[in-house]
Length: 231
Image (cartoon, rainbow, N blue to C red):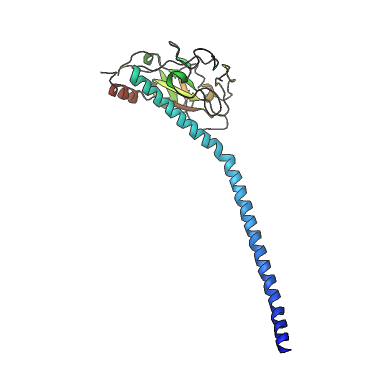
């Protein structure tokens, strides 16, 4: 009896401990579930923010490559390429080929061996200063100015060439079909429509998301001179 009772007492004492263990495990599962839920919430919050920034970083990289391609073209040819006709459809003859003496239009992707469009499927806009579309030298000056905002400080002047991605909203961009997106309601974005020689480059806002790069005149001359095309 003693052994039986001992076993019964032992069994009786083990139940609460088992229940406590179960409750402890349940609490851990609940905490884990809360942690997973919180992580999922944070992940969703991050992924809602990061894609645009990641895309802009990728497009900025492409713009830098396009600028390098322009400099490479100048090293070989002693001049910068003219823009391509932006209204020409992708499959049409002459699409993406420089069209001199044009000074503004689409980046001549075929001439430079670059992709036709940016992440959003729109062509890069390109403007070049007239003096750089023929053989130039160290005294040649560009006529393009880049501002921090309209009426703001000058980021660069006498620029040989500028390239624009019109961003996610795409205002003013040309499409592979040869049609153009509508104008923007943002004054700074409208400055990047190639109509004149003033451009704006600044941090993205709710109404401005253009990405702009330009060719530095001193570096261009230095590189072309190193390539033997300038004395």
